Amino acid sequence: MGHKGFQINKLLSIIMLCTLMENSFKPIATAGLSSPSITMFKDMESECNSYCIGIVKPILQQTKQTQFTELQDQIRNLNEIIKDTEKKLSEAEIKLGVCEDATRNRETLANEQLNRKTMQLTELQHKVKEQDAGFKKMEAECSGLRSSLGICEENIKNREVQYAQLLDLNISCNNSSKIKDELLATSKALVERHKSAASSDIIKVELKEQKINEMEASIKEKDTVIMTHNLKIENQTSTIMKQTEEIAELKAQLSDYESPSCYGKSTDVHVIRVPGSEPFPVFCDSVLTDSGWTVIQRRRDGSITFNRNWTDYTIGFGDLRSEFFIGLQKLHLITQSQHHELYIFLQGFDEENRYAYYDHFLIGNETDDFKIVSLGLYKGTAGDALSSQKDMKFSTPDRDNDRSTGNCAKEFRSGWWYRKCYYCNLNGEYFNGKTTNQYGINWFSWHKNSLQFVQMMIRPKPH
Image 1 (cartoon, rainbow, N blue to C red):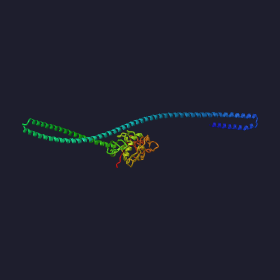
Image 2: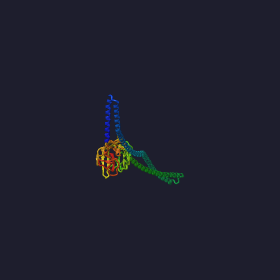
Image 3: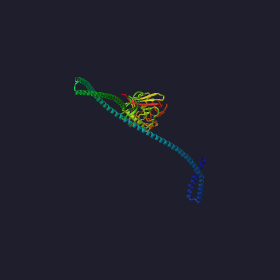
Image 4: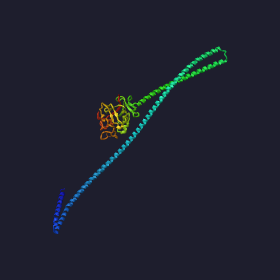
């Protein structure tokens, strides 16, 4: 590098010297010097040029060689970059293929879930129609029973009239028997008195006796008819009593179907009806704390996934006797129908139990994205972790309504009333064992461990 610099400096000195000489000799030439002098100067200029070329050419060749070497290095680097880029591109294509496969699988799974949900919705609609038909049939049967009851009452009145008539007829028959006895006595007296009477009188007496026998036979037939009617009246009375009991039972069932809550119901699945909806089944619980609670959510074994879309959370999903979510639309209709209280039962994997109670629970409609309109006052042993979610709209992985820059429902794999993101989440992923996991079923005002059992319940608040 030092030799190269020396040559460059030497070249520059020569060029400057040649330039100076050329500029110096131009005025002399123009002043009238002889041709030999000019020729000498030109020879010197030629020698200078030759000398410069001799020095510059190796430098240029060396520079070109250096540049060529550098270009080769750059080409090698570019080839390595291209190979690395092609490798990354290949890996990206593989990842893209995997993502496309995963996307297709997710689309297939989503379509299957959609088909299952559509089938379940169709089955539910069919069941609702069957229940409606059953209710209409029961109402028709009740109407028929009422008509039958009226007919039976009318028949009883008619039977009572007939029975009175038969009694009168029986009295008349008894009177006829007395008349017969009197006639017999008279006939005997006549026979004794008129033994020698004419044959026509004897015939008359025989005719009278024949009439008396016919009257006795008629009386016996009427007695048989009266007994038969009495038996029919007893049977009809028994039938009417049974029908009256059935009507009372049907009225009780109708009253049960019209009930808007679980008050007075056992711990089991029952049907309720609230304003704005058809009757639908719910699970009533009168054991966990006290009576009259309608269960709206339960987690206990992870048998049902809660990582679901907006439609599933709106209509509800799961098994009422196992894990389920009642549905946001039903929850809105129930809580808006009257003042409700909320009770949340929590259990950890160490079998320790806690609870949280709120005295005024109200959920908005779908236009408001089913936000928590009210919770009321808190009391309990688990700590108040839900009040921070008040006024928040419900979010699902496909419907982001939270105040976070991301999608909390998508990140934490469940629908919930997220803010940024949560202080409690009872719809999180179920972990079968004691663990601390942000994706689990959590109530952070108690502890950070995912819970073993959760049950959310509501009921009308007593006035």
